[in-house]
Image (cartoon, rainbow, N blue to C red; front, side):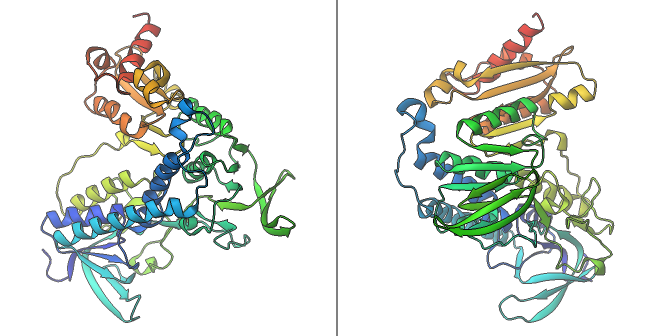
Amino acid sequence: MNSAYDYDLLVLGSGPAGQRAAIQAAKLDKRVAVIEKKAVVGGCCVNTGTIPSKTLREAVLYLSGYRERNFYGASYSVKQNITMEDLVLRADQVIRHEIDVMRHQLLRNRVDVLSAAGAFADPHTIKLESVESHTTRTVTADKIMIAVGTETTLDAHIPFDGQNIFTSDEILRLDRLPRTIAVVGAGVIGSEYASMFAALGVRVTLIDKRSRLLPFVDEEIADALAYHLRENRVTLRLGEAVSGIEKIEDEHGLRVRIHLASGKQIVAEKALYSIGRTGNTSRLNLESAGLAPDDRGRLEVNHNYQTGVPHVYAVGDVIGFPSLASTSMEQGRIAACHAFGHEAHSVPELFPYGIYTIPEISMVGKSEVELTRDGVPYEVGKARYREIARGQIIGDMTGLLKLIFHAEDRKLLAVHIIGEGASDLVHIGQAVMSFGGTVNYFIDTVFNYPTLAECYKTAAFDGINRLGG
C-alpha cells in the first residue's frame, strides 16, 4: 500500500461499475473509498434506470394480465384501472431493498462511502464538496476510477416540465398514466418504455430517425419486435426526424404537439424524450487530471479501461456502448484487478445483452449480418415457443430462439432470443460458446420437460436438418 496517499483507490460513483470496482479492490486488501454525491448509493441503475424500469415492467405485466391474455382474452386484466401509484409502489419497495443491499456490501468490505460531489484538483487529488453542509476538503489516491455514469441528453429548445414532456429519469414522478403518448427515440430505453405503455393499453407513437429498431440487434429479432409492437397498436414512425416539440392547450386540455421534419404532426397527452444519454462528466474538472471527454461526455479507454492518464481508469456507461449494468460490473472488476497487478480474465465477446421490451430480447454473439460481412459460413436453427410444451403452458405463442453455428465444424457462434425469459435462457448458449462447444451439445443433452430450455434441442435439430444431417 502507498502510504503517501489517503487511499489506494478512489471511485467516483456508486453504480454497478463503481461498486464492483470498489469491492474488488477491497478484496485485494486495498484502502478504498467511494464518492457519491447523492444521498443514496446505487447510481442511475438502482434509483432511476435499470431497477425501476425492470420493476415497472414486471408490475405492468402482472397488473395488465398481459401474460394471460392468450388464455382469457384480450380484455383480461388483474386490475381494471391501473394507476401510476400501483406501478410506483412496487418499484419503491425494490429500490429501497437494493440500496440497503449495496450499502451493506460496501460497509462489510470496509469501503468508505463519502457523501459529497467530487472533482479533480490534480491527477491524484479529488476535491470533495459536501452536498448538505457545503464544506470542502480534499482526498488523495494512488489510483482513481471514474464510474459516474450518464444523464439523459436534453435539448435546450424543448420545454421539459417533468410531466407532459419528460425523460426516462422522471417516469416514477408522473402524476398519471396518459391515454396517448409519443416516445421520441427508439433505442433500448425508448423501446422498453414504449412496449410497457402499450401493454397498459396506452396508444403509443414511437419515433426514430433510424430506419429500423435497435440496429445492433439481429435483424430478424428486431423485425419480430416491430411486429409485436404494431400488434399492440404502437405506431412506428421510423426514418423520421423531430424538428420541434411544443405544449398546446385546447378543449382537450394540455397536450403535446411534435413536429417532424417531413411535415407530419403528432399530438399526444405526453411525450417521453429518449434520444440517448450523456456522460456525467461536466462537473468533474477533468482538465485538472489531463483528461478531456468527447462531445457526449464520454471517456476513451484502452482494453484495461485506462484513460490517457494511466493511473486514472473509467468504467461503466461513461465509456459508452454497451452501457449495460452487467457489462459495467465486469468492467469495474477487471479495471480494479489491473490497477493493482492482479491477473483477471474476461471474455467481452461473450457478454450477453438483455433488452427488457415486451416481449423480452436477449442475445450473445454476432448477428447474421455481421457473420455475412466477415465471410463466415454459417447455418441457422430455430425453435418457436409455440412448438414447446412450456410455451403453450405459459401462453407465449410468439417467442423465438435462434441458434447460429458454423456450417463446417458446427461450432456455436451466437444465440438470439425474443420471448418470455429470454435474458435467463440465453445463458445456456453463452456457457456452450465459452468452452467452444458445437450445436451437437444440444442434440446429446437431455433437458427438463417441460421447459423453455428444450428450445435449444429443437433449434439444434432444425439447424442440422438444414445441413442435410
